[in-house]
Image 1 (cartoon, rainbow, N blue to C red):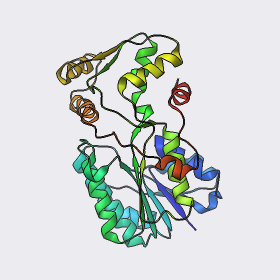
Image 2: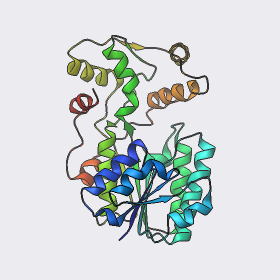
Image 3: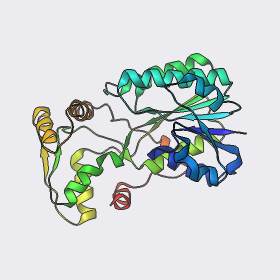
Image 4: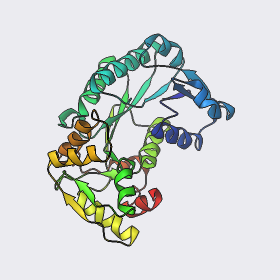
Length: 283
C-alpha cells in the first residue's frame, strides 16, 4: 500500500509524516511537494519524494500515480486561489485512480460562516463528486495560531481580542497530525466526517489557563473590530492581512468554531492534549 501526503514540508504536513513513520515503513510512504529540495531529509530516510504543484495539474498525474491513500492538506492563500488549487488536486487524484482521500477541512464546513470556509466547502463537494471514498478531517483551530499573542503575554502585553464570548476548540497541531495519520493507516474511515475539536473555550478561559501556566496575571482587552484592526496595524501587520485577522475574530465571535465533539478521542483512542499541557509545550 502506498500512502502520499501533500504539503509534507509544511508545519502540519511534516508532523503528519513523522507520525506515519512511527507506524509504517518509509518505503510505503510518499510525499508531494512543490520544492523537492526541501524534502531531501525525508528522501534520505527512505521516503519517496515527488514533485507536485497544485497550480500545475500536469505535475499531479505523476505525483499521485500508484497512490492508494492520499492526504490533501489544504493550501494557504486567498479563497479563490485555494478553490482552484484544491480542485486541481482532487481532479488529479481521480485521474490517478487514488482509492481513498483524506482532506484537512474546517469546523462545521458545510454550515460555517467562517470567512475561510468557502474553499473547504468547494473541496469537500469536489471530493464527493469523484465517488472516491473519503474522510473529511474538519480541524477546528490550531493552538499554534495564537503564538504571537502568547509571546506578547510572556513579554507583558495584554491579550487583545474582538471575539467576545465566542468559543474555540483549540488543539495542538500534533494532535491534528496524529489524527490524520491514524485515518490514513487505520481501517473503517471510508466516507467519514470527523469534527476534530478540543474542549471549547472562550478567549477569557484560554487566557486564564495561560496565566496559570505562566504564573502571572494576563490582562484581557475586549475591543471592537475597528479598534482591533487599528491595533494590529500598529503592531506592523501588512494592510492585506488586517481584514483577514479581523474576519477571524468576527467568525469566532459568531460561533463558527463552537463545535462540540468527541471525534478526536474516537480517532486517536486517547483524549486530546489538555489545554494547559498544550500551552506548556508551546511555551
